[in-house]
Structures are given as C-alpha cells and as structure tokens.
Figure 1 (cartoon, rainbow, N blue to C red):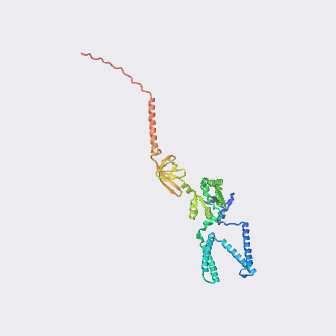
Figure 2 (cartoon, one colour):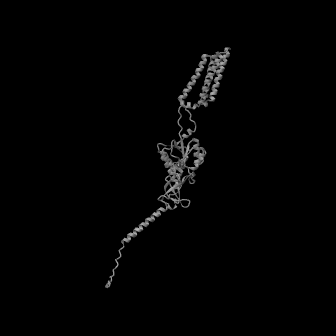
Figure 3 (cartoon, one colour):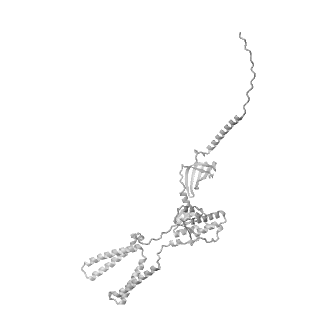
Length: 419
C-alpha cells in the first residue's frame, strides 16, 4: 500500500477527536517508588531523633574523658556518619545488601574465633585487646566488602520478589498499521478473542487514514472510510482496549519509519499486512504480527492426489489452462479446463506451491468424474439419437395404412378328361 498521496500532500490534517494517551512514555523508564509526604516527614523525624539521641549520649557518657561540648560533637559526628551510610546503602541493590549482611556476619564470627584464640595466649591485656579489635574490624570489613561484591551470585531476586511489593504487570501493546485497518480482518480476529493486551493506533496512522478517506479518488475514499469504520467497530468491543497514542516522535519520515521507531522505543509489536513493512521491522529485530501469514496458516491443507470440485472462472496464462478460486481465495490452476469456463469441474490436485503472496494449487481434470469434457457430449448425443428414433417411430405409427391391393379375377381352366 502506498504511504504517500501526492494530491493530498501539503494539506494539514485536522485534529482527531480521539483522546490521546501517553502511557508508553511512563513504561519506557523503570518505575520509581514514590513516597507520600507522611512517609517523608516520618523519616526526617527519625533522623532528628537519632542526631539528638547520639549528641545527648555523648554529653552524658563523655567518652575518653572529654568535656561536654567535645563529647556532644563526637556524638553528632557519629550521627552524621550513620546518615551518610544510610544514603549510600539506599543506592545499593537488594543482592548487594543481602550479600554484605551475610558477609559481615561471617566476618564477625571469624573475628570471634580469632579473639578466643588470642585470649588463650600469654600476653599483655593491651596487646590482646588490640589484636581482638583488629580482627573484629578486619574480618568484619572483609566479609562486608566481599559479600557486597559477590552478592549478585546469590539469586536474591527470588527472595526480593517474596518480600517486596508486587510491581504492576507490564501490559502488552500492539501497534496497528493503516493497511491492517483498511483490510478489516483485524476486527474479526479481535471479535474471536485471539488478541490480548492494548491495541494502539498512533496519531500519524490515524491522520494517514483520514487523508485516504478525504481523497478525491472514489476507490481510495471508500478504503479510508472502511478503515475508520473498522476502528470504530473495534472501539465498541468490550473485550478489546483500543488506545490512541500521541505523535511526539521527532522522526519526520513516512508512516512506516515512524511506526518502526515508535515500536522500538516502547517495546511494542506491529500488526500489519504490508509485506515491505514486515521485512523492515523483522530485520530491525521487532516482533511483527502479519494478518496475511495468519490467514495462510489457517488455510486447509491440500495434498497431491486429493480431489475437489471448483468453478472455472477464467483462462490461465498457459494454453489450455483454467483458473478457479477456493472460498478462502486460494488460486487453483487447472490444466485442460479452458474449454469449460464458467462450469464446475472435478479436479485432482497435482502439486501445491507456497509463495510470498500465498498458496497456489495446480491440478488437472478428473477424467473419471461426470464432468469430463467427452462425457457430456457423448451422453447428449446418445440422448439425442434415442429421442430421434422415438420420434420416427411415433410419426410412422401416425401414417395411414396403404389400401389392400385389388385382386384380379382368376381364370378357371377346364380340366382335361381323363381317358
């Protein structure tokens, strides 16, 4: 289908009455967890309580025999360190957090074993305390660092899916092309409930459909109006969600390029029956649902040697060929059927060929059937001969009988006397 209409170029399409939706922009970025104002205020209240509590603890306990002000400053610095650690851990993934926690626990357990061994040695208490704290910090740090680095190998997504809030399911979106709307079979497919998800129609597709409907050519105008009627019929179906998308694509090319760019950006599939668009989208790695391929897949399988009865409609390209069509539009080429155009005939399938345009069936006339070319003529001739003989017999019966022949008087001769 041609994507450009020379006589309609330069005309500014009117705005569509359909309500535009920009949900695909929200799905193009990963979802972010938004906090309500109440949650934010609660977090800040907890942080303030933490800072005040640590500062008060420093004033009350006065570690290292510090004065009141330096002790309060030490508590304040400790609170700020905790808040910085919180800000850093917020950016870490769930697997890193779980790995770091598990590694830290293992490191602390190892440091406890080392401290028990050191406590059994004969040495000064200051030395034992130094090595005990050294083992605690060293093993704790090593366990935390290594656990965070290798936490991705723990498959923590499974555990995270159990404890985290279930994220909304990403809806499957399919973009409709102009050609598939004009074709009209997509409405029957939706009515049969073979499609799920959201069927999206971009604004540029709707504009092109409206341009075709406003064309001066009666055939194009009829096709465009049919596409709009199909779209309106699909919108009335309760089991189908039809959504109109805004045309905010910076690409200024034709409709095919815009459709491919939009499908790549939002991760949607394309529904079309345009052969060229199907190839271009497939080469670029996009999923395409071709209505023509679906129709070909649903056609009944015909094997060589089977017989069928078809109506010969026109001549074929080769001499003495006739062409017929099945109910689904499949072309049947019959050898020797040129003489019986506009007549039904029994055909034996000889071969089946699958082409890009569809399936073609080749066959020959079934000589054993009643519709063989020599049988009707012979039967008609025999019937005519029988009718002519019957007519002659009837006419002969109606003729008057000839009069009987007149009898002449016989001459009687005297018999001779016997001596």
